[in-house]
Image: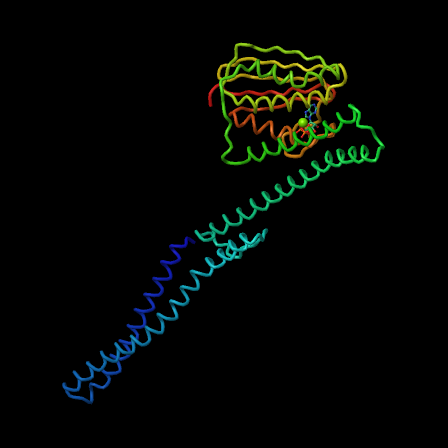
Length: 347
Ligand SMILES: Nc1ncnc2c1ncn2[C@@H]1O[C@H](COP(=O)(O)OP(=O)(O)OP(=O)(O)O)[C@@H](O)[C@H]1O
Ligand SMILES: [Mg+2]
């Protein structure tokens, strides 16, 4: 029952009870005084009639006052009880209590407010769990490279290892890993923030792809990976250069880790009517069904995962979507993987 109908019922019941009391008293007193008519003259009739009216008024006022006081207390109690409950619930949420219960289950406006508060409780619980997971993951990942650099430094100090170029290079790589991780987490926090905006410029997309490839050129050489580029050099679009570079970098890095030595990575860029498409193919190990379905989930690492953190693709998807675009993946085990990105020319 709706809250306003409930109020209407309460008020109607209240007024009717008042009318009922007045009528009962009037009838009772009228009757009482009329009974006396047999033994009185007309003066006495008027006197008793007056008396009846006065007494009626007095009795009515006295009894009505009591009824009004009790009824108002009851009405206030009925009306404010669920509001008190909601208020208590909201205060508990503010104090950080979660997974609370609401006893008021009636489907009126207050009941709906209760449902919204319950949803808020659930959302906050999920949000806090994610934040906790992210913090734990960050702490874990930062500890690894730091511990590794520390052990190198201790070894240099104790004379167990010499600070050769190779050893210093290993330290630098660990620090690079740390910087990349912090950079990625920064980005992820940014993207999840409602005010996150990309800053677009008119860019030649083929040049962007070449730039991303140059960034990993030494690793491609080292792994003897064949890289094929089939790009339409005439495509210009309004994109955030840095973010698209990050998208390409994440996918190419994944491809590099999942192809075997002398494997192939092929990047294709072509134009469609309203958007441009980038396909990134690798003939690596491919993915099973679960990995294909969960690849864009935060922290998800497939069975074929190398030493990653499972956040690269989460970031990649969010960045593509921030451009109004879409990213999908097609993959078969032991056959290879193709990422398909499409981004509209205008959003
Ligand atoms: N080209 C690919 N071929 C096969 N599997 C892939 C490929 N790219 C991603 N995957 C699978 O998807 C999972 C998620 O990828 P994602 O990039 O999000 O995480 P990651 O590479 O494990 O770690 P991170 O990128 O955070 O360092 C990987 O663990 C891997 O199992
Ligand atoms: Mg990755």
